[in-house]
Amino acid sequence: MPKVPSDYLHPANEDPLMRFACLVYFDPKTMFGQSAEANAVLAETGPYNHELTASGHRLSGEALVLPDEATTVRVRNGKMSATDGPFMETKEVLGGFIMIDARDLDEAVQLAARNPMARLGAVEVRPVVDFSKPRPTL
Image (tube, rainbow, N blue to C red):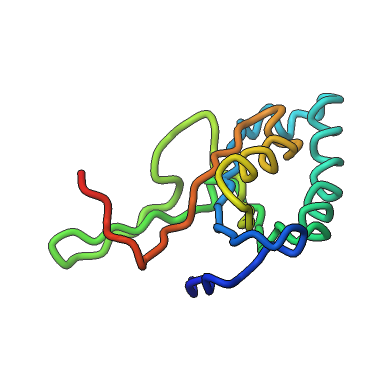
């Protein structure tokens, strides 16, 4: 991903922006179980995305197919293996992502909290790596 110029400004207040990935996790049985709450969440997702776009926060985003349609690729000792299905078995799955611009983590968390899917699942907010800064030390 190209580095955002330091003078890139938020349209609403002209503060410098940071990029964040909002990773949307949910249990497919709950999200697609046809309950009234699930149907309401799914119906509210489009308007939420339009609101983020209109406010200048949403950069991109995509819903993902369920993990049973995934292929997991590994390379070990120079040999590639591809396995049908998810990387790991889990109840909640990564269902999609939204890339946003925000002034800081607090604003990004507030934007993510308005995501209807957070009511039935979780939205993990992660800053995008700034490659101009040193690598983390572990």
